[in-house]
Every structure is written in structure tokens, then in C-alpha cells.
Image 1 (spheres, rainbow, N blue to C red):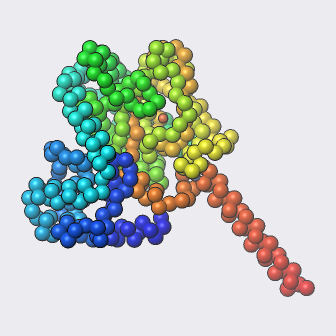
Image 2 (tube, helix red, strand yellow; image 1 turned 90 degrees about the vertical axis):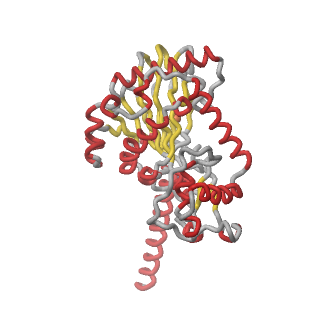
Image 3 (cartoon, helix red, strand yellow; image 1 turned 180 degrees about the vertical axis):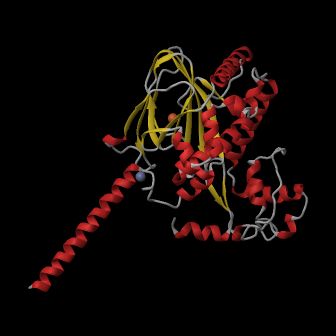
Length: 383
Ligand SMILES: [Fe+2]
Ligand SMILES: [Zn+2]
């Protein structure tokens, strides 16, 4: 981390908006009345803003609250909201606000009309959802327990048995039910991402409560240990969806990186052939198109109920599903802290294969130069 970030952090809290642009609240720009404290009141327990119709993420308000000046901190929740909203509005682009508001309305409309098929999927029932070996490892919560249920076929790619077959079946049926509802109501839904035309964003259908838990209590503890250098311990949001492949659906998926710090990809079934994932090394933005090293090549065949966990920046794609249908549950887990810090860094050798290679090369050059220097000195003292 360079000094720039330290200085900023000393001045004011850094706020992340949804598009990932960090917005700084410099004291000089806030009016006298709406000035935040320089350091947070760590003893203060922030209110929850989840139930309010806000144009910003409710979590943002809870985070910002500790920085309120003492006179506002003890006021009513409504006055605190008003105060923080005033500050946030100054820094949030209009377009982003409109987009977030529209998306909220879109979700509300779906949730008000869609009838879930398997209600048990909408809250966390760990013993019904997960394989006992996975639950035991999570319960023990140590690197050793996680590694004991995992294989690591290539550095930074972990596979393990995660789901019970019943859960896979329920989720597949729920997505089928969503598809049916979409056709019947002719509702235009947003598909998981720019590359997948089949499947559903589960949060849009009300599954966020369960998925938040899945990220917080299951993915984050593992990522904290295995992916700490890419924000594994501070994962705080996710984009979760089911994708479907088959002859009549999407067949394959091109080479790409995910918009995530850590991706959990679990195969739900059903019977299929083909559809192997291919991995080609982790890269930062600058190096995303650099050559693959032989040791970075991994091809992996999905196994139903089994998960694969990898960094979002691990370049990958999926080969054609040649027969049958393949469905996967995918969580793109993100860390706003990591994204903010990344803006002030240039060297990602703790996770980017190419940054690592360049660093090694620089070190070797410097060792060679030192050696040459010493030899020269030696030669001079002998003569
Ligand atoms: Fe992906
Ligand atoms: Zn790099």
C-alpha cells in the first residue's frame, strides 16, 4: 500500500459505491453543518437501515454512521439518514443512483408476484443443504480442516464435495419454476451476466437472505484462510446466479475473468457430458492478456454436488456441453475494501502470475548487478 491511501484514510472514511468507484468525503468539500468526524466512534453501535427505502445501500449508512459528529450521532435515525444522505448525494453520480433505484423496483416487482416452489431454499438450513464433511470442516474452522476435505489440482483452485443431492434437486426445480413463471407472465428478467443467456439471478427472486448467509458463514471463513491476499476475509457482497448449459441453451463459455474476488462454482447436475472448465493462471488487469505458463494449465470436469473455489481473476472458460444439461450455482463474492485498496497499488505479485514473474526477473537482475559490482571491486583490490 502506498502513502496516498494512508493519507486519505486519516482524513475521512472511504466510501464505495456500487460501481466500485471509491468516493472520498474530503472535509474541505463538506459544508460546516454536514461535516463528518475524522475518526470513527468505535464504541458506537450503528443502527440498521435495511427497512428503509433508500437510494444507497443500507450497509453504507451503517458504516458511515460511526463517523457522524457527536451531536448527530445521538439524534433520531431519521435525522441521521437525512444528514448522511445529503453527504452521499454530493458524490454519487445521478446515473448510478437511477440505475440502483430501478433495480430495486425491478426486484420488488418480481418478489411481489413470484410464488416460490421450495420455500425451504429461501432461508439457511445448513444440515439440509450441505454434505456432512463440509459442515464438519466449517464447524472446525481451521486451515487444516478445510484442506482435509479439499483437493488443490492447481495452485489456488480448490475442489470439494459441498451440497446434498436434495438441495441440488430443489434448486434445479426452483430455477425450472422461475423459467415457467417468466414464460407465463412474459416478464423480461435480467440474465446472470453478459455471457449467460440462460439461468436466473437468485437475489432478484428473493433468495438473498439465504445467499448472504452462504457467503458470510461458509465462503468467507474459507476465503479468509485460502485467499487472504485478494480480500478473502472482507468479502461483503455477492452476485449469485444459476447458469444452464445444454444443446438448447448456452453451449460453452469463452475465456474470461469474473467480476469477483472469490468465485464459488457448484455443479447442481444433471446428467451431461463435456462442459469442462479450463483454467489458465491468475492475472491482474494490466496482465490479463499475457501468455499462460505451462504450470498454469488446468482442465477440470464438473462433478454434481461438488464445488470449485477460485480467485475471480483466475482466467477460465467452459468447453461445450455436448450432451444433456449442466446447471451450476455460482457466487461471485466481492470485497469493497479490497477494491478500494487496489486502486492505490501497482504490484500484485502476491496473486498475479505475471507480476510475480516480473518481480522475480527484477530480483535476478539486481542480484546479477550486485555480483558484478562485487567482482569489480574484488578485481580492483587485488590489482
Ligand atoms: Fe466465470
Ligand atoms: Zn499483474
